[in-house]
Image (cartoon, rainbow, N blue to C red; front, side, top):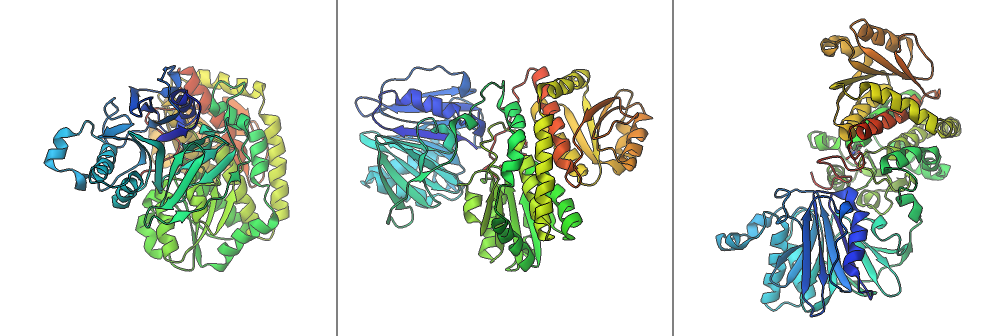
Length: 581
Ligand code: M6R
């Protein structure tokens, strides 16, 4: 949550470059934004605005150093005063995370002088107080970071001191380097057009950056650290929209190849994860939102393929069951971003108890990937739209492969998945998109949408509801197909649109129960049924029908959003990576 970005270099348009970099991080938060540039006389000039940064064409004063922030509000309303950067004395600062104990540092006297309602302003104040006490700049930043509780990433400029200080605990920060300059960002796409050479700042570390000179050290002791340059395999075009109108539809179409990429792991790597599942006494699959629904689908994969019962709990609810985590527990974390706070916290506490951790993430450098004993990257390519689409199907594919490997049937598992990947490739074409568009036009005015599914299509009904609600703001609710008649069927009226996922006999019977009460039935299944008023054909995919079936619903959610004139990439109130609890 919140994108932060800085550049220290030689080119005199640092402000514009930070603006461009932040636009690429806007998916992390888009309530307000702000950029500070160090100008000629070594002071700092700051611009802050409410609203999305993507529309800005701001001109900045000349300067070779700049830092900026795109905000998802936590403390304080969405106002210009609360937008970052924040300033106190000689300190200008941006922050991603939460300074949990910030009120400990606010006396009534200080309170009177605060300009914002944010925890961030108090960090600037803390650093400036250390400077006033005569601490060297690096020590002032270090001592302040030592006092902060909670997860954070900060970027700091100090008047009269060239260079930028960065520190992190829990929230991501990655440095990109060229021969003359350095970029510091919450995520790689911010500087991917400039360089693919990166250094990762690990938890509890800080760095002082001036041009291309970097001094790494530990926050706790000040001990110097040496870092290795790493070349990331990401390609620039993967993080651009290209010919597509939005990232969401581009990423839906990326599923032509991402399902196959997700399972492109050696049998040995898959077996490392399976060994953990098989050598422990029970597992918890930890994830939030869409990734949690993916894990619920995996519950069926493991039960049906491997005869294994896995426990799936939304991570925010996991504290209730943490007492069951011990040395013989496997924790399987599934997260696109690899930074989701609710997941990460359980993993940290689980690791301390000796639990074994398997992580499935799309961001290989993420905190969740780094804490794991075994990490299986999704390799779906950057996912920038807030809605999880290609990451979700890649997660399901990889989890299905794990389930078949657990059953000793990895070769068959791979074949099934590759056959599906080929069918998805054929399915995703403009004609299919048009078919979905026609259905979207028919239902766009409906106030409610119901979705039913059975077996692994039940969690997909829940996931469909998330997808539709989050981007189109249409109220949607998913149910186990057999459950509608136990209550929710009372909501069905003449014309109520109901998505029916799957075409097995029992689900069709349930669809008929809805149709008899006036529902308009939209079937998403391999075979047509006379019960369907509309039909979206999906490929037959034995055991992984869930993967095939969610794709048209993703397109439908997208189309509903666009028909309503909404921005599907940046839905209101949301952010791509949720690094707060
Ligand atoms: O990065 P993660 O996969 O951990 O994110 C988890 C959820 O926040 C995420 O899946 C969210 O529900 C999506 N916006 C849904 O499309």
